[in-house]
Length: 419
Image 1 (cartoon, rainbow, N blue to C red):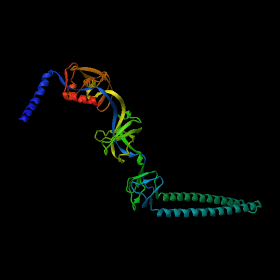
Image 2 (cartoon, one colour):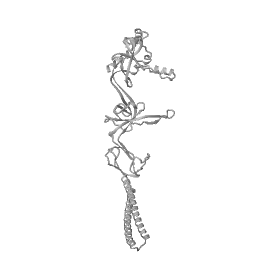
Image 3 (tube, rainbow, N blue to C red):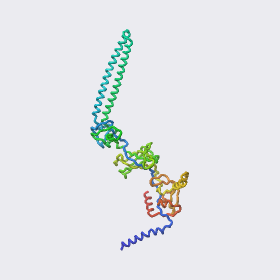
Image 4 (cartoon, one colour):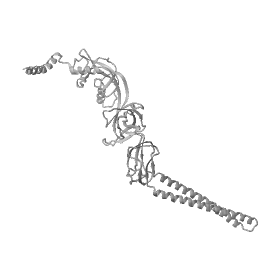
């Protein structure tokens, strides 16, 4: 019986409360949501997406062609600058060096021979000059002697030039054989090893098999590169705080600061739009902090929020509570066919609850974020402002009777206590 009485009482309560509320308030009253204006931190931001990368990273490629004979490191190993990483088969290059060394020796022998020939021709010319003074040989014989000396000097210069050429080729051969031993250009960690013993390393700028040996990176230089749209890049400056969320750690916020803003944009063709328009964005680099407890890897995607402006503690309201005449200006311009520019001063206003009546207040707005709008003038802390619902708020007029719902007032009190 007790359960039946409780059930009956509950049903009566459910049906009677709406009737009582309807009788208690005037029929013309608008049911609205109210919230007390309070002090909050507002941080305007720019959203962007990108990926993680190592700022100090080197992808090693072979400079000569050769089969990999020995690999001295493994993936994940730390190396220092100058450490030997791998060795290519150098037998053919050693044979080339031996051949060029022999060519250099041959040129030295030729030079010695040309020096002896020049000395002989100069000695003969001196004897001919003595005989010519004694009028025992003709002028033609003297000319032949001088020509022979000049010819010997030219041959000596040619031999020396050929020696320089042979020595240059020898240096190139020795450089090629030195390049068969690949050493670390920086201190870091082997993050990728793309080749195995027995495979052929190919010196090529094209991404083909064997064109990449390994990747070395300084893992302490992890950064993120985010693509900021050209419409927002003017708001971004060096040193701004950035909050980064990676796909691997969506609940962890990584702190960062803007470190580099490029002068030139990237152009990406947008195939979804007609005319193959180019979407422009700027690759902004961000330094990361407090990443010790996270296992971050290059190439991870991330989203970033760049905080461009902050108000500190300021009076604020939800964005939907602040109305403006922008829509009216747009409608007026549309009626005029867009031919004339409409010079109408933009106004913002809110509706304040004054004894159950909506009072329109012109306000001055400041910065805003995704949910809150800073209010500079027009309202005071603690006043109740109509924040919704929007379908009611947009038709509300000053002097209208309003009633805040019980749920709205409970929410308002909770928000006020949290603030």
